[in-house]
Image (cartoon, rainbow, N blue to C red; front, side, top):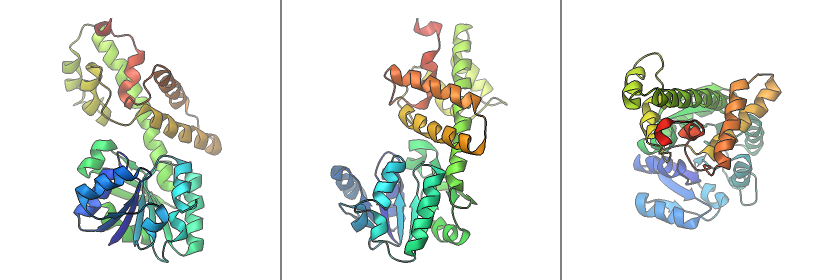
Length: 291
């Protein structure tokens, strides 16, 4: 297939690479041209200097950028992809953005004669690099079925969750759950150290039981070492939790724990941890090993 990929950040760069590795003809766009040139040297394919020119000949256009404004910029903005996409093309947005934006762009795509899927991902940079992301999709069944073989190039699981916006809403559930898990893991780790236990032994054993989680299995060791350069940044988590809380206001949900943890992440930011990974919540807590 002829594929365009817009956005070569820590997620988009390897995701586009997997599409190229599977034999698709990939044309990339990135705001920083040097990043696109580096990708071309590594994976082949081609690059264009605007989303519009990258998308003009594509059968499928993938996108993974930062936030709602970034998505609007590469779709309906000046030199955006929606201005040149052919009828019948599918636009797949892997950005974690608002459900309202997904619904807006779905309608805009339909008016122009092509299709749109909101398809945020979970699995982090490692999941993108290893091609084992989980993809939560909103849109129409027929469009998802057409697109699924390409999504499978970088995903181990993909599911259609409902109409436009349902993928983004599902990602919000994901982030709400992660926020509480990481705070609980941070408190447990600090408690174990302060109690004089061997933290590695504690978490090695309890990760095999009912307390186990992906966060525990993959982050306990680096948290004990006070290392926080291994995953999703605090800045991006706060952006995502902001989306969750905005949506909760609309649908009448109570998010007491999420609201508290968002405040804790604000404290990590204020202390200079903007680019730390989300497990850096533990830095707020007293640990005797760091006295």
